[in-house]
Image 1 (cartoon, rainbow, N blue to C red):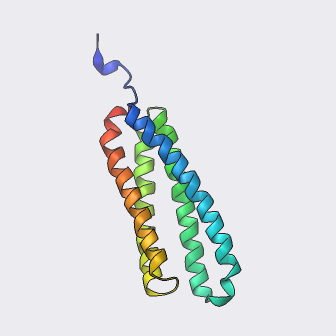
Image 2: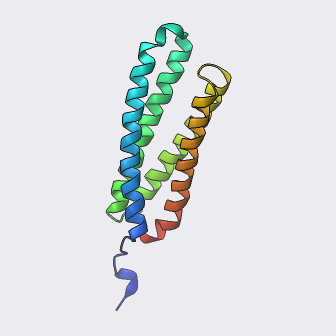
Image 3: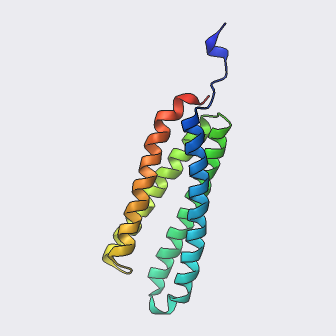
Length: 139
């Protein structure tokens, strides 16, 4: 029996991570839509530059959520390219969220929103590390 030609099976940990990723990012998309609508109603108190920056962050986050969901679905099918898509989406998310957290701390929204961004970053980083250790279960 040639073990190299056998298809690698997804581990239960990988499957759980993928399902949690899909559910979590779907929740984050919903949170983002609600937050965007709330901020839309309070735009009269913000400068045009601030509104543009917030909209850019929402757009980038939305793209990374879709990328993470796509990567997780592909990983559920046992493909390693899904891991690459997920990791790139996660890295872009970490960078944009870090910049947004700094923006919140320094300029507009305040410490509470900035701290929430750090929590989201921590969760993303944890999942990126957990997926990294599962990539050997993918083709």
